[in-house]
Amino acid sequence: MDRVDLLINGAFRSTSRRFPLVNPTTGETVAEVCEAGADDVDDAVQAARAALAGPWGAMPVAERLRLLRAVADEVDRRRDAFLALEVRDTGKPVAFAGTVDIPRGAANFRAFADMLAGQHDEAYHQDTADGRGAVHVTQRRPVGVVGVICPWNLPLLLMTWKVAPALAAGNTVVVKPSEETPSTATLLGEVMRDVGVPDGVYNVVHGFGPGSAGEAIVQHADVDAITFTGESATGRAIMASCAADLKRVSFELGGKNPALVFADADLDEAVAGTVRSAFSNCGQICLCTERVYVERSVFDTFVAKLAAAADALVLGPPEGADTDMGPLVSAVHRDKVVSYLDLAVAEGAQVHAGGRVAEVAGFPGGFWVRPTVWTGLGQQARTVREEIFGPVCHVTPFDTEAEAVALANDTEYGLCAAVWTSDVRRAHRVGGAIDAGMVWVNTWYLRDLRTPFGGMKASGLGREGGHYSTEFYTELKNLCIKL
Ligand code: NAD
Ligand code: 6OD
Image (cartoon, rainbow, N blue to C red):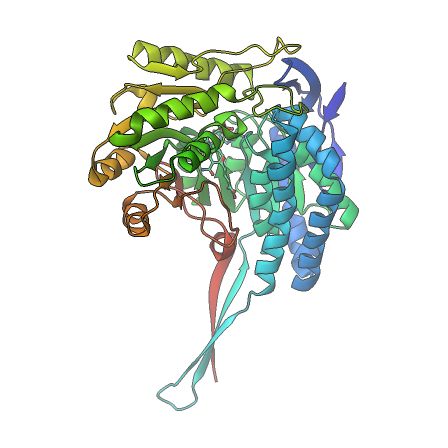
């Protein structure tokens, strides 16, 4: 059986405590994962600290960025190996992982190498009363050892989205991938080693959250910052723990994202866009739409078209030529999503598509759920308020623009929204009024890595992307020299 090791100080390490890795399309165990103990986490942190004080800290920036570009090239070269592991761990379609997850794994390194190449100190000349003057030099330096704690939905993409800027800014990292999807993080360790990134710069420890590797990183006194992507409840627990020694934190958390469809929108585009925003990656993207608000005059048509499009989606194995959707990531997550399918009906929802588990020929053990479209629930229904993180959405009619904005904002979350309209003034007005870190108009999940990414309210803390990542991964200091 395949084994997924830790990576500490440039060496792969196995441990005696192991946990099974399950393939979501079959429900079968396909590998065992080595769980890091607190001593392994401590070794990883010490290795990261030593690399910071040693070869990585001493390396000229241009050489550091050259290495990160080499990492990107090597991820591209080993695309098939990354793809195979990502698909094995998540069950997602090859067509999706091959065009989203793995290319972004490489693109993140290139983007942040480019951004950091343009970084420079600032200088200020000051006149002083004695006529001698002073010069101030405002410098950036790395924060130090960064703990990177990751979820399972876009494993390589989301991990490298944090690792790339952290390393580009000169930090070292200890990564804890999700226990559900550990493999590509360890494979990236081979890439780091092969292109010549010094030992200890990139470390990987596997395990769980509480009482395991996640908690050990967060509580480690020699970790300077935590960057975390995952559930809002986990973010709260991590923040409480980080308060003890005032570690800086960056959080990308949950969402209950709205889409607003106005009658002046191209309805077919809005339907196709909502199919993508609600059901991509089986609804397991923090940015996925789970609440759709549609102007009443086009509501019935929209619901009928959305339900028909959802019913047409093909669930199947990752390699299937016509597969649109894979399974949910685990039996536990499938059970959670199914509990909402039951709850929605108990709350009075009308089911227009899906609403049930699915069977896929040849894959009886997989965690399949049909894409689901509901209507009929009020804003107070738990189905409409709580993040489900599955291929589900609820559609509600509205009468006025003001009502649509109020409904969109009626949530504890504030990650993103999609607005469908052909009126540019409305796009600007509504986009500005929605309380969310990102609003897409007539599109969804169109990314430019220079832009700020993150959520308001319970959806996050801080922003990453472009120079916003540099803000988080560096300390600013001002040096004043009296002349
Ligand atoms: P999760 O919070 O359960 O786990 C995320 C990671 O945190 C895992 O590696 C887990 O082992 C670790 N962890 C759990 N408890 C911990 C603790 N007490 N201390 C330290 N580490 C701990 O999230 P998940 O189920 O893996 O991912 C799904 C969630 O992530 C959804 O809520 C989704 O919206 C959110 N998410 C948000 C974004 C974003 O950009 N805003 C992106 C992806 C996922
Ligand atoms: O595209 C990204 O950079 C990003 N952070 C996506 C997050 C997706 C959430 O599941």
